[in-house]
Length: 220
Length: 260
Image (tube, rainbow over all chains, first blue to last red; front, top):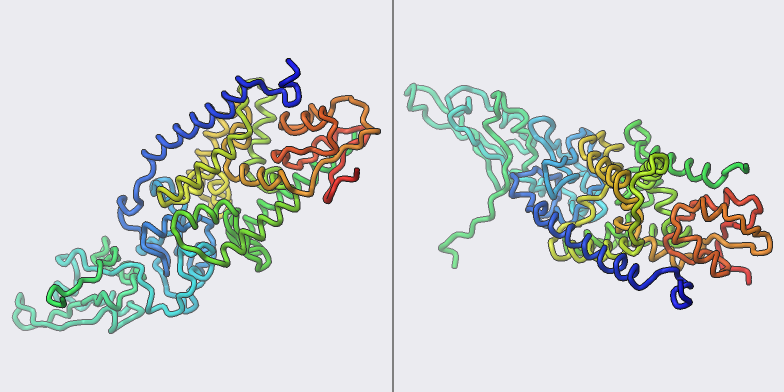
């Protein structure tokens, strides 16, 4: 080893190889991997996020997967996504059919979030917008078939606001009434209690991504 | 053989950290969250690289998040930067145990540069800004391991297994040495930290035990050979292995300015 290199013990060749080429090779490999891996989470379907979540793209950006919201949930409704969620691995979500959000008045999950992925300033459960309930299978809805089910309506924490019953004539029998549950999406918070309560084996009412607010075309 | 008190203390802290992370499972939520962000005795803590990534990715700035990250940065600045790695990080614990196995097997001898962690941090922050996701948090084995403890989520532990396989068969301690951006961040802090391993030259018998004990050969040897008063490398985890093996008590851990 000559005197120019003895103070560090690193030759120029070693410096170039380890200091530049190896990190560049790692960066390239990482970049290639990430293009395969980084897909928008909502492209894989809708995740019901905890109350106060930012819109999906920014939520996935802000969530650092610390799990504090899940630990704060008294019902253990919030689960952490596994590898199937791709880029959203480790992010919190709710599977309403198993345990819905019961809308704690103090919203402890949002308060626990350190990073702003859930808005901790949220103070009113009626302002939560996790999604919107939709009757996706009208043919299998017992109420729409003319039976007196209305379980989703009775269980809705915003009964007579988010879900109302609209009676109408039953043309099939000609003498009965169809008590139709109607979701009002300006009131529905997307908690998933209706989806959880639906008596059919496969729920006919499910929470979906809230549709964008429609601007009336005539309102120019 | 002296009692390896630094190593014993370190194992105690490592086990304590895992116990704290697991504490909510047993109904005693002394600590909530994980090493990305948590609350200990009501004090909010956040990993500074996690804060940087989330803020760059989402463009959402939360002042209390910055405060929590600053508390942690200050803590590790005072205690030595990569003291996070040596004393707190559960992935370091796992790879450290893997390293014992590897040295018995004699496989995977390659070493990569320590500067890789700084590159990794830079790439992580750049990707977080460009792609809009906190890039390292997706692949973080620290997150995977802590969430496995918190939520019994075992499936992502495959990532830890993959890292172990690479370290066993290919490159020695490649994750902690060259890839982990959190390590890169704390190495930069540790470069300027007041807590350091210092030498008492007159006691040193030049036996070389400390050089053998040091897990990162680039850390202790250059400072010792260069007749410095202390270990200058930011990559020193302050694990104290060198202090433990020194029969002459010529090494000690000290916080503050060196005595000239």
